[in-house]
Length: 129
Image 1: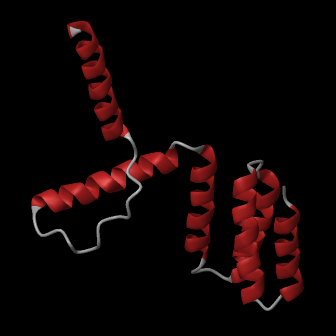
Image 2: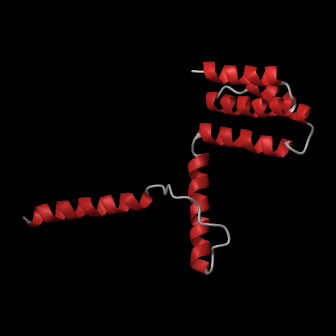
Image 3: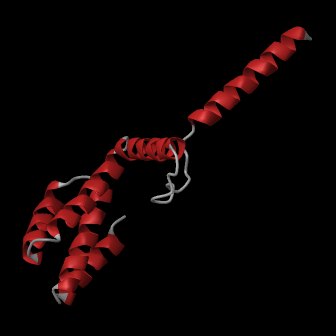
């Protein structure tokens, strides 16, 4: 009987420990809500955990890079961004990243009033399997 309780206790401790290691899917703490150092620390820990989870997957980090590139290129002429993304579209081999680039191109073409090209990007997204 004592042996069984040791095994059950060990399993319970392992389950608790693994539960602590599980990634937190909660939303980030509200901005400006840190009223003391503990809340501020919790926000920092949340940011580190979620950034590490994003960076651990090649698909996710590539998609994030495409989003960041789109954000950086907003200050330039739309044609510069269109040329950049068209070049990258055929160099990138990762399909989720290609889909994100196609969405960026769709937005840019729509912004420029080139609806036929925007529709082509949407069509490619629909056909992508």
